[in-house]
Image (cartoon, rainbow, N blue to C red; front, side, top):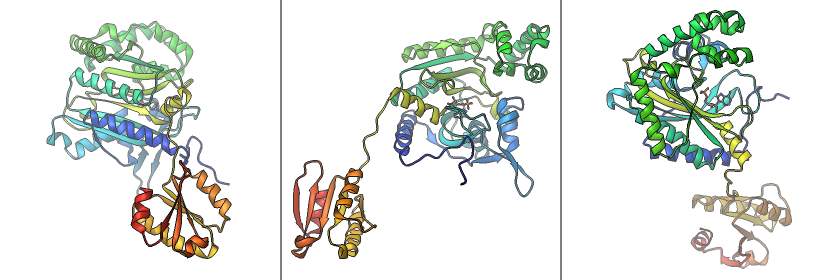
Length: 418
Ligand code: AMP
């Protein structure tokens, strides 16, 4: 038997109500903050991500699903959304219609990572991008919005970590400081980190190897070498978060796994999901639009992992979904009435009611069992002497009250069920 590919998962009908609940909450909060939805293709030209995310990142270097199509073009299933949104922003000149463009998305993403709890190869993210302003108040909005979404799902065990990576100049200066610090320790670094020492030294922070992490922990911190502008922006952000009543901690090692960040980076972690604690991450990317061929445009955003959030919700039992139900289940008492029952179901469905009935010639008892399983609000019994007298029997399942309704009073039947 063919099974789903490793690291991918079916979202079954029984899972869907929880997904829908999350999506509806998320969309409502995005709309409260005046973000508009965007949908981009599942695949893009590989160079978009290679250029946008950075060649030395884990995502580009190790995790992308890249393939050649029949005309030998290198394509990649999107591993994240920011580069794709910026591509669409530039391609359709969205910035010329509005100086600040606020967008959100909900979409599958693809990364060939080692699957484990909370880590998949096809997973889903929702997120937002605000392109066109360098205001730290907009960064505060991003953090508030993502926090509000997680709270709207009832999550409690959350920690917000923030950091500033400064301007590109700060980063260049800091890279020199880090290089000086690591030069005589280079032979203690892992092979990957030794390579990154030469190609993109900041990426050493991504290393999951303990000996690398130990060295990095004692390294000079970027946040202690910030330029004035970044320092001020970080102060404004912190003040604003405090005014919003949002708790946060400063984590100087939070550089995040993508090259495009400038100034703010942030992450929201949950204590309820095991090893993969990050539910959501984001930050400012003032360089990306230029890197992808646009004019210099400041921007900020975040992305959150839906599977991981739902896992946290499940572990915290943070919300419950009301039981699913239908309006009415039609029970056919006499076998020969199946044509009539089908016709009546069709008419009721046209009235915008949710209706079902039996196609398997089951007994009345079995039909009743099915009706109970479906948690139907009403059952309509059709057949027997009543039917001969031109009546059907409508039973309200929550009160058990039964009522006979003339078959020629279809409108009345509809009103009763509604
Ligand atoms: P990133 O785009 O790497 O900043 O990730 C943002 C969020 O997406 C993370 O905090 C996770 O919640 C989620 N995420 C990232 N990679 C995976 C994955 N392989 N499987 C499931 N969720 C993921």
